[in-house]
Length: 373
View 1 (spheres, helix red, strand yellow):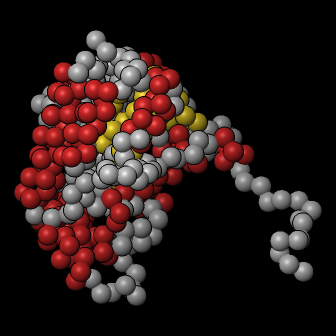
View 2 (view 1 turned 120 degrees about the vertical axis):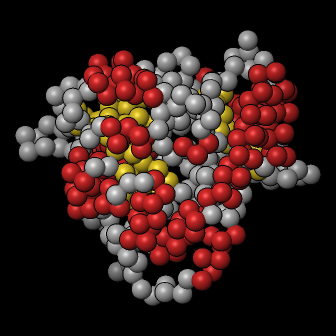
View 3 (view 1 turned 180 degrees about the horizontal axis):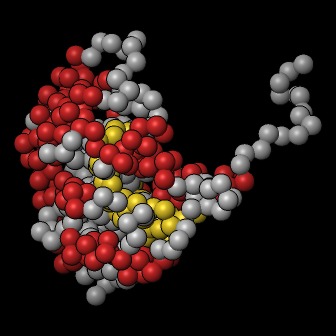
């Protein structure tokens, strides 16, 4: 009997929460357009290759038949020196998203009383948050952003209650771009109970130039209930290798090591990350070139009359509302892929110089252009 023709009497069913979860929508490559080079600006990737030492470290790897170090000792040691933190305070993961999943697995979920914990975060923010929170068994508490695309920290503090176990702060906020300031976060932490874990997600930290922006590592030094997420995917150009980490006090990290996925960071990824840290000056140069391009793009958009929120990541946000999908289609006609969030806006990553220039050109030609000042 063939498998195709066999009909089960009952189908295997997933957990009920799975059917309620949104689906993660990765940025898609652009469709080819005759006569135009195609550029993908739909994912917050670094358009430049990693520094040469990283490529050499990757090429030198030969132990593909062996499991990696499950606790990434070399990388944690390198990060300890780089950040001036104890190595035991660092837990690696498959990107900062993997590190977040470990935090939620350890500190959020459904309790013995059958009532789920609550995880508070701004919305719109990183689209994986509701997926990760729901998968953990916890309940999402989404607090709307302000009109400027910023976290409403007063409303977030008011949303914290006895069921809250974790709060997520995304800075710069993906996809809108603004950062949280040190003063804002200090004020927020003063309002939050010390038994609530506050996670500062800094995937784009290296691109931040606002002198008042919060530094998650400094917050972790001052507050025992703070954990920080960082990644090598963006600034270091290692998105494909999936290597990130969290930094927290040891009363937190000892639990994270219990729930961490074994061997999540490969030896290739670990050696690449260590090499990138060792040549951080070169990384900074690459990042600065992207920040310079971001500055050019934001200035160009504003000269065209577009209203653009503070941009401190490697992307810009157009609050197009109901026209988000239409703008994405328009960009596609010009061989650019951008990330549309239906009925909200469009996030456009900073890419190659030619891609950024073409993006500005289509913004000057887009016939609807809501948000003009």
